[in-house]
Image (tube, rainbow, N blue to C red; front, side, top):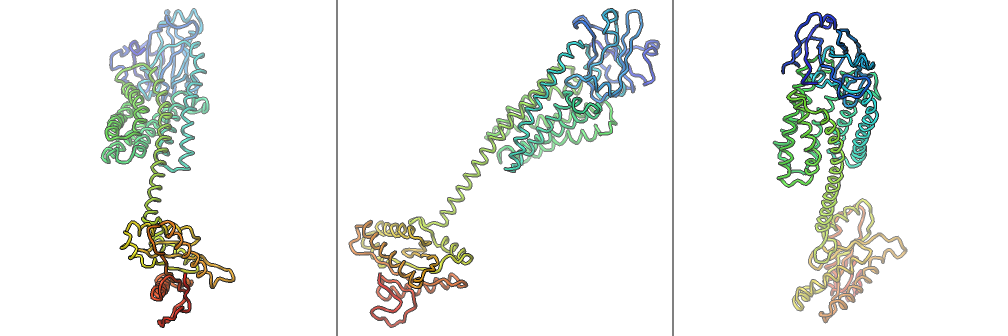
Length: 552
């Protein structure tokens, strides 16, 4: 009825008979929504030719309404009137945020045929759509549609809530910040759908229409603000430049600031507030569109989920903003498209969140694997794959707390330079690898600390022969090494032997002092003819078989 309705402003004391008696002209021009009075009268012709038989109702936007009157003027000038309080307006809700008020007398076919004009009195209207969206409809038709449409909106809310539960659950486990903001986005979408569809009156029948309107407006503003923060944290690092992140944040906060200023919770605002509110979303919409293209150009893969989920929403929202600014009336059915795209967006972004989590976990696992590999490289000798000196020193420091090892042995290959000179470095390297494999197979912590020198941290031994334990164990190890080199490096014709120096590890001794003791005894073994194990300090006098030494 937007093209046929006319308006007039008055005080709240003006009655319907007084309005007709005054005979003041109604405004039917393009400025007819620029009303000034606390009571707005809307006059529409009673065009019921296309409506089904039965009662006819007036429908319109119920946002912020308080009290209304419906007057039917018959062909003989008689008037049928109905008055509605705010509670009655809320009780007569229709899906998608509308009221449905029966035109008095239209229930009677004879009276309905005589109705010529319908006058609607709206007290303190908050939005122009309370007038511009007025239409006549069949009560029977909309009574039949009430349940299926309500079920449809309930299903849409349920579909949106499922990703909300999913995100909330995984946020508790994974703590990815974008999941929290996605929860806020979904919560705002559910609140908007729940309020604007009319389902809110099913759960909260006593809620005022002004409160319901504020819930609708605030939920959209919060949703847009949360979506910007979500996008900043969701897209891969480096895909959105910092200046653009700041711009997106500021434009997304603008609707919140404007809503707080022009739509205070006390309801003290005029119809111009709605225009400011809707206009405040435009910078955010255009910034989001630019940001999606920007991130796509920079190689973002996650942005495809935003493009799929947000592009339809932005398009429907731009239409909604244009209608909110009263640039044109449009088709209210487009609002159903907005509801569906909002819910579909939550599902698409839920898939996007799952995909992003998968890739982030994959990146995290790859990073951990690289860290492990770097740690292994830092702690491993490249030639023999044994522990290196760094790893050996770390293990010794750990032993100062755990006291797991009782002896330190330093093992050196005898005449190794001669092996390299005579048979080449490739053969010498193979000897080192064979020794490394054999020492790694022992129960001791084996390390290569440089050149042809190796160390063994030997575990504590509580058996009765513990005093001879290191010597016996090292004798077996040296015999195994000699045999292994002979078998696995047949190019070497003479036997390759080993000299060993051993030192006990006392609780408070430093690594430096213990290494010095073991090293001194290794040199004693070298000086006394090699191919032997020395575990005690011996004199400089060089007997045939010195005390504290044993030939391997």
